[in-house]
Structure formats: structure tokens, C-alpha cells
Length: 537
Image 1 (cartoon, one colour):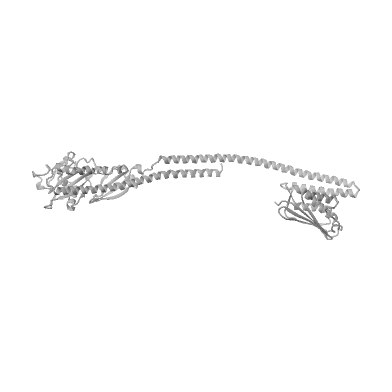
Image 2 (cartoon, one colour):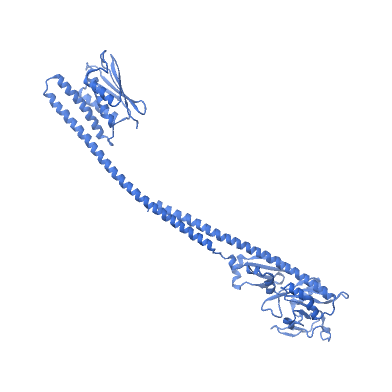
């Protein structure tokens, strides 16, 4: 497995896992956002409901205060008939009471509204109240039956209640007490009193106080029935050294939820309550939505299948590539073998032609006829031209073409060996001739050069020069010029009618390769122009 493949698989895995995790957390974050909105709405509703309930308390206290200002002697039955509608309507109220103001001098009077004034000891038991200048004992209470033991309890005997009564008298408004321990049925929960002082309309003296008794857990449970299913809360009284008024949270979880808590303040009559709201654990813990896990598993599974599919495809491509490489190497070996065989063929043809030329040379030595010797010499020159072509072919690396410049140089060197009384100049760019045209072109050039060397220079003492210029005319054609500075052709020379075997060979080969041969001749030399087709590389 290559590094690129490993990188590709890792990239697909990383992208797939990232997308899956992104969708996973997006779904859960959407749920968390919904839960946060749910908690925020619950907190807002809770604040509104608490404030609304406190406002109702004020109305009840004002109504009860007005009632007792206008009634001097109120029996229990009338009190219950007057207050029961409030208890039915405002179910968060634990009890309503009337506590008249009784001076110490009146405490033992037979006309006292209460049979006995009491207070509680350290254990919460009722005992006879201690002597003090003023008492505010409970004279009337509704409901009576469950709370009848509280009748006679002196509210002025306990410091927090006394402070609240004094504030109610001083302000003449409804006031709330600091957190208190209820004397009956508190079940360990704290509560508070809502108090309103009542004055004698004639003497302006304090007649007593009306009070609403609240046990905080019942107050909140009935007021915030739906909200407490979503949130926990802790309420402290800021004017009582943040004394805890209520909490429904487990002690061990208080610190753990600090970061999730929302702190609010609410004006509760004359007091300020600090309320810490905390969502229930199911509303702030990571939700682990089933849908998100299904998407995550599906995403990771899809990523795994995609990686597997890519791996299978890569393995298939690797096998195909191996086959291609094997087949390519086989073809290269086959081509190499064929090239070697072809080169060997050209080499053997060249050797055979040289052997033929040697045999003809041996034959020349036995002849006495000049015509026969000349004919054999001309044939030897032609055979040598062909042999030279085959030599260039097998010497070339690809054995597919002949370098024209190298061939012309070798041909002129061969001619100089036969007739050293001339010089030559070659101007040829890099042009290669394909195998189909190489041998015919070699014979044409050989014939033209041989004719020039044999017939153009009758005087070997002069400077005899042969120029060969090669020019590419376009992408498909090449011009080859052979020019000598000899005596020129006869005046009646006609290229198309020349009867020599050399020109017959030239005409036949020009037709074979579709070449065009022209000439110009004068006293100072002859020029043959050969135009042949040859594709540029």
C-alpha cells in the first residue's frame, strides 16, 4: 500500500468522521438549545407567578385589615366564613389569622379573647408566655382544626415575628417577615408571614395584626406546579443575611450546578428575595438524543463502506496496472527483439551486398572489356549505395529511419576513395528519411553524384568541387540540390530521353517515391534539384 493510498484512506476517514460528528453534535446542540429555551421560559413564568402571588397576598391583607377595623368582636365562625373564600382561591396560603394587641395588664382579664397566651420553648413545645408589655397572641385562625394548638401563641414572643409586626405597625402597609420556623406542621420547611397592622379608627391605636401564614414548600409547589418539573430553585432573603428561605435541590448538587444557575431578584413587599434557578439534570446534561446516535453510526458506517469501496477499486486498478506493466514489458521485449532482428537483417543484407561487390570486383580483374568493367563498376557503386543505406539503418538506435546528413557524408567519402580529385561541401539540417524512401533516395543521390564525379571533371588538375545543399521546403517536402563546377551537360541533353541506365534508374526511382527532378546546366557547372516528400518529425 502506497503512502498516497494511506493518505487518501485517512483523508476519507477524517472527512467522513468529521461530518458525522458535526451532524451528531448539531442534533444534540439543537436539543440543548430547545431545552435552554424551555428552562428560560420556565424561569420567566416562575418570576411572573411568584410576583403575582405576592400581589394577591397584599390584596388579602388589605381586605382583612379593613374587615377588622370595622368589626370589634369577630367570632371564629364569622372569621372562617370571611376568610374561607381566600383560602379556596389562594391555595398557596397555609392559614389566615387574627392576633389582637394585648397589654400585659390585660393578659389575665376574664374578657381576654384567648384562653391562654403561650410561646414555644427550644424544643418547639407550647409553654406559658413570659411577661412583656405587649402581646400579639393568635385569637382567630383558619383552618382551625389542624392548627388549634397554635391559638394563643404570642407572635411577639419570637424575635423575627416581633420585628415584622413592628414594621407593619410603623409602615401601616403589608410587610413580609424574614424566614421563620413555623410553630406547627412545618415538616422541617421554613415559611414566612405576611402581616398588616389594624388600627382603631376612633383612637388610632393598634388593635392587632392580620397575618397570612405560608409554608414555603407548599407556597412554591402550588404556585409553580409546572415549572418545578423543569427547574430547581433556592431562595434567600437578602435583608436577613441571605438566610435560606427555601431550596428543593440536593446539597451535593449545589456546587455542581453553579455554572448552569440563573440568579434573579424579586421584590417581595418590604423584602428582597434572591432566587437561584437551576435546570433539572435532564435539561442541562448532554441529551444523548437517539436520532443523533443513529446518524453518527450511519455516517461512520457509510464512511467505512466508502473506504472499503475505494480500497477494492484501488486493488482492482493495481491489478490492472500490474497487467499493463507486464504486458508493456512483454511488448517492449518483443519490440526489442524485433528491432534486433531487423538490425541483424540489415546488417546481413549489408554484408551480403559487400560480398556481392567483392565478387564483382574479383570478376572485374578477369575481364578485359572496358565496357564490361565499367558496367560492373557502376553496379558496384549502386550496390555500395544500397549497402551504405542498410549500414546506416542498423547503426541507428531505433532502426526506423536514416539520418540524411550522415548518409551524405559517408557517400561522399566513399566517392572520394574512388575519385580523390574533387572536394565536397554538404549543408544539410537534421532530417531523417523513413525506410520506404531511404533506399530509392540513396540510389538516386548515388547516381547523380557518380555521374558528376565521372563526367563533370575532365581535368583533374583543376579545383573540382561538389556541393550538396538540403533545405526543408515545408512540413511535407524537402529540396536536395547537387551542384558541381564542371563542364556542364551537352546542349542536346534531355533528362526525360537520356538513354543511359543510370538515368533510367533515376527516373524509375523518382516515380517510385513521387519525387520531382529538375536540372540547370551551363559551362561553369550543372545543378540537379530533387524535391521529395518527407514528413517532418
